[in-house]
Length: 233
Image (cartoon, rainbow, N blue to C red; front, side):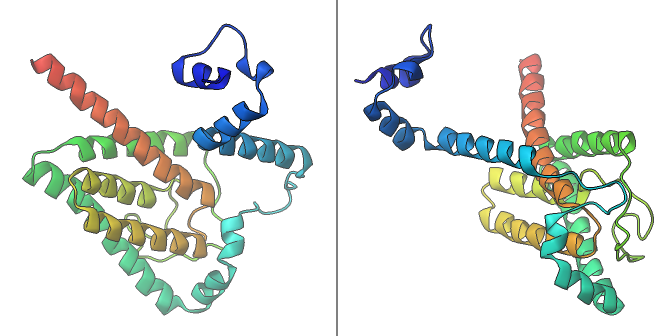
């Protein structure tokens, strides 16, 4: 057994083991611990970006690569109000579906409150963060009066409640082995993310953090449930 096999699989030693790595150790790490290796490469790439990328001037609009990728869709939606209304209506239906599943189906009918607790944690956090840092809407925003839940008025940008809510429902479906239904929600989540970028209703970071927040608060809700069960024993 090599030095790196002992150190990685059996616990850390008193000094950094990589100082004595051989070529065999490097091969072992890249084969058996390739995920941390990918993160190392990603970290180096981010360092390169941070040291070479110029900040966007204050007089310029924010740079969002999601906006760049959906530029053609934005032009179509901006020039076709009826199509934008139809897509908004479909997205609003998805919003009603996620609430119905989380509150009515999972909690009221099945007696499983975890998804509802997750939603409460998530949207409370979203409200606080959205109030602390209030981001302006894109000047290219294409709104609609039937956009769920608040229509064509100002709303908290960070993070996306649409994406977070759909992710919460999908996580609960997977937990209950409703895998096909979860896959449907995942696909709808991707489609709504594209629409939100196309309408300039959210920045890309809002969508990504929406997914991350849902996963984090779902885990937190699970720990809360476990703690409450222990107290009842």
